[in-house]
Every structure is written in structure tokens, then in C-alpha cells.
Length: 174
Image 1 (cartoon, rainbow, N blue to C red):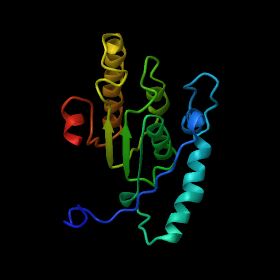
Image 2 (cartoon, rainbow, N blue to C red; image 1 turned 45 degrees about the vertical axis):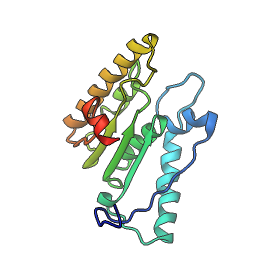
Image 3 (spheres, rainbow, N blue to C red; image 1 turned 90 degrees about the vertical axis):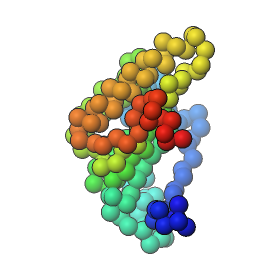
Image 4 (cartoon, rainbow, N blue to C red; image 1 turned 135 degrees about the vertical axis):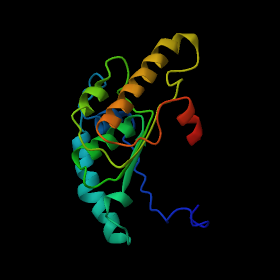
């Protein structure tokens, strides 16, 4: 895409998670029993140390329209938290298979107060997140319904989700 001049060159910074402690590292609300939410520390480190270091090392734009953040599952949670706490830093958000949309839907509760989302939000949730067997059917239906609720929340706050819930938008992105 870059060679074809269909997109500008990009710098992607991938950060490994803490493994077994990732639920603490990436969550900003109680999600896993015994895991203390510490996403605020992660976001502070990301915006206060990592991003400034990248900006010093490379010639990058710091304009929100040129700065995105994203993740999958718990990584999507911490990406959304970064946008929630630093709306002026990020103009693009990728949320894939975001954790916290299960039975109690804590992600919906946590992020419902956000009134400003980035101009571009890529949001997706598969229809078989819990598995393809019959035992997972009810959980998959719950995830899909809550993903639709989350997408509606984004739309109500003025975001323009370019992803969406399955089946059409999920398969069109692959």
C-alpha cells in the first residue's frame, strides 16, 4: 500500500504484555477476580514515556489524525482507556474482540461516560468469540449483542465506527 502510494508510511510500535498479569496491566475496572486494575499506569507510561521517546527518535507527526492506538481483547480495553483519558492524542482507534463485553458488560458501563471518541474507530467482534460448539452459543450471542450495544454507544458519542459487528463488516475487513 505504501509503495502504491495508497497510504503514507507508518511507524508501528508493538508492546508485549506481561503475560499472566495482563488482566491487571490492561484493565481499568475489575474484570478478573484477584486482578487489580492498573490500566491508568500503563496509559501514563505509554503517553508519558513511550510516545515521547518515539517522537524524539523518529520524525513523526504528533497530530491526533496521524496517531492511532489499538489492540485485541484486553489490549483493546487499554487502547480504549488511552483514548478515554487522552482524547487529544489519538485520532484513530482499533478495538478487536474487546474484553469486558461478556455477561455483566463492564466495558459498556466503564466507557459510557466518554463523550469524545476519535474520528476513526475500527471496531469488530467475531460471532464465535467463545467457540463454535453448541455450548458456546449463548455466550456468543451475548458477546454479539453487547458489541452492538457498544457500537451504538460509539455512534451516540459521535464516533464513526468503520468496523462494526458481524457478519458483513467483520468479513469485509479480513
